[in-house]
Length: 431
Ligand SMILES: [Zn+2]
Image 1 (spheres, rainbow, N blue to C red):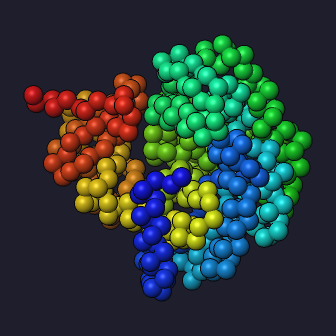
Image 2 (spheres, rainbow, N blue to C red; image 1 turned 30 degrees about the vertical axis):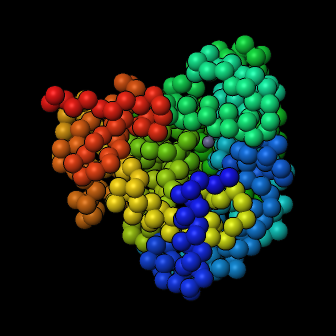
């Protein structure tokens, strides 16, 4: 099932393909390349509530990208190309897998080998040590094993006996946590009631030490850092965030006896990481870091420690993949926002504009999407400013950052939970 927005975007891309204008669209929008964000890869994702990419889609994607002229290269080679600053005539595609799932070895590796496609796996320390609080897998296990699930943390009962109902319930509970990562800890009391063992789940789904060592030696594979505990770095103060980044790098380097040069932010969305963390990752010695901000890598100079990625579609559809890889979907979303069909997302740099409720952000610099984060001194910086009169509300009262949706120029702002039923419109402070 795809959303109506996805359906429309696919149709527009299909039209561009049909009329032969897709090349023009790519030259304008596809930038230098695409970094794909993947997690689990399974033969039959439906049986695991559709949280993985089907093996058939991965196989098809790699073939499609090669046929359409993308260079499938390693992250290191992409970073080198970006550092040289000269746009290659051919666009690149980079494959990255987050979290260190066992199926990356069992299911993905043979497909990547078939296409001779390099890839990076980002591994949090505690996935390997089996201490990870993998709440997303815990939720999935709950819904897979039970037809009635009481989540006291959410104050909700889910009655779900079919796979479709279980999939929907999992999405609903996951969205609830993703709106505020501090809620993940609240779920723990429900996991205890259902006798869920994090160690068992981790053992079942994540690479073991031996498998990680083995796959790290494969010529197509690069291992990257993903923090110690897979925490949203935005939830931590600077010292704690830096410790998460550094300790994980040291752990992987000593386990694998090789430098670990690339990093992925846990969750990767604007709510989970910011330019502060990009500075921390750079100071820890990483050469690159990837987010979950869904854009192609643009032609202009990019922040190597805040690279965008693209989520692949879950089904075999030329327009769905082309629309993403060629930058058409993000462009359509931008157009939809500018004419008020979609909420516009704005993020404020808290160092320049402290998140005090009611203060204005006339001179605050937007660091989120859209557009991509500005480099310091970037001449485009001015275009990234929040509209005058925008007001600030802290997220959950604890976040160090402030982020907003605006629906019009004169700015009706809502806190980030605007997608949830829990969100409340921001009070007009002058009232
Ligand atoms: Zn992750």
